[in-house]
Image 1: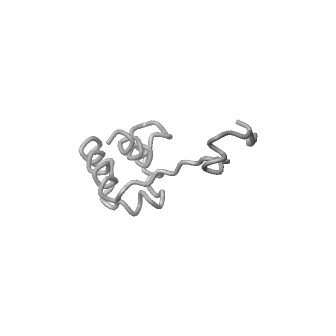
Image 2 (image 1 turned 60 degrees about the vertical axis):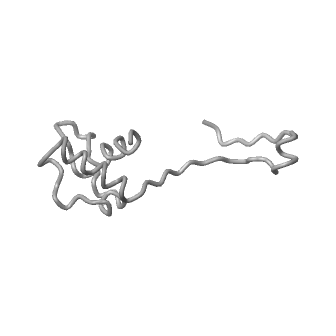
Length: 86
């Protein structure tokens, strides 16, 4: 991907001023994160530590909680996958 901006005159630019760079940042509610965490607890049982909560997810602390034998399969990523599907 190149970080390049090409300007061209168009009716959209005349009306709205154009769009230079678009970024996406998803924010999930605490309730939805809690729901995803609950689903993970139902699926993985004791592999999900008792201290795992919404705050630890938001701070990225759940990357250190491995699920299964794969080193890159962690609770943080699993919750994010569940959030995308809810």
